[in-house]
Image (cartoon, rainbow over all chains, first blue to last red; front, top):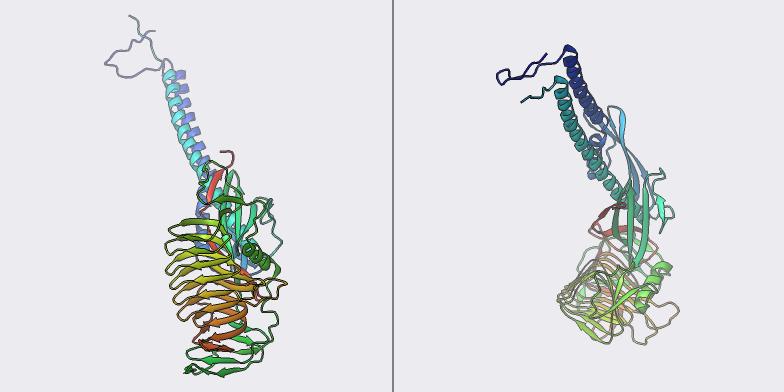
Length: 113
Length: 421
């Protein structure tokens, strides 16, 4: 059965109900997959978190003397362990945690203050 | 004319492809952003590891692993490569850190630092110490007989209240002139102007080809005959070697340059960062400023006349002033003269006589103190000389027993590289 398209009709008509369902399903599938992948990627992405952790450790380093009580910033916490080395140097281990999960472990050797 | 009919499914597929493409592009962009962040983090971690490797070397703790890749913290992912080269009294330490596909290199110059101790040490034959004029000792001292007196010379009596503003330790200090083997080897090699086997030498007037692969060692600029240098600008690390007397003009601009010559004089008013090594004498003119980390090192041989290291009035030396005697020689011991108004920040070490009339912030070690006047030489006299503890965060050491620290005198600008790029 022919349904010639005319300018006043303005929109397409589905050939059948099945075709409409398939089309809508396809669109919904693609959209949900894209959203899912996006959220998955964002969730799996640690670089932003690690950048924040790195910045917190740098702040600790800038303070020169690692804080005795752990430095806390909301859900973040930076713990330090200091080991003295020979001739006026020390090894400092920084452990940066977010909500109890270790995000970054970093060891540096620094002159003693 | 018949028109094609488009089905809704065809449109849906088209729209789905469009949406998929846009989503894919957004995802890729986010992904590349994350990869860049991770690379940046890896580069910073590699730089931090390279710095830590240099600090670890400076700490002198465990035996350092040099000239090969090693795991800095033993966790399997902190690779560093450390090389060390001697540049005068400095250690030039280069470290490369590697993390992922990122490599970062950085250099540092290490300078020895004394860890406390007395501000003045005199040898066992020094005799009594006479304080004259405005002389001041602002710290602990170590002298052989503990005899410190008020002196009176050239019409100048002691003007202070306390002879020593610190403790006086009675010690014989038998080995004032001794320098540890490593330090002595540096002094001997530089003062002897011995060419190294791997050195990369230029003659004056030669312009190195910029396309030429850089030499791994410090380049050497050779001069022949008696020379006066004016208006020369040298950016080190670089060795300037001359086989005769060398005079550095006031308009020379040297930074991290090692100067080797039998006799070196620096014109009044010069501003340099330089390490001078000589065996016949060094003369630092009036109002010269030798900035940290600078060194004046004199190694006396068997000459009958005592070689002299003179720092004229208003001159300032930040670093090391050292006059030693060549091992196995019996010549006249060297003399160090610091004129009134001069300032040394660091250490003065004289394996002979020291005439100190300036200001020293750091430490002095000498066989004996003398005062030469137009009429006579007085032993054991300190006229107007001031010695006090170092007043900054940086000082130098000469190889004495109390030296046990190395500090970073200067960092280079780090260089980043992506492996395989």
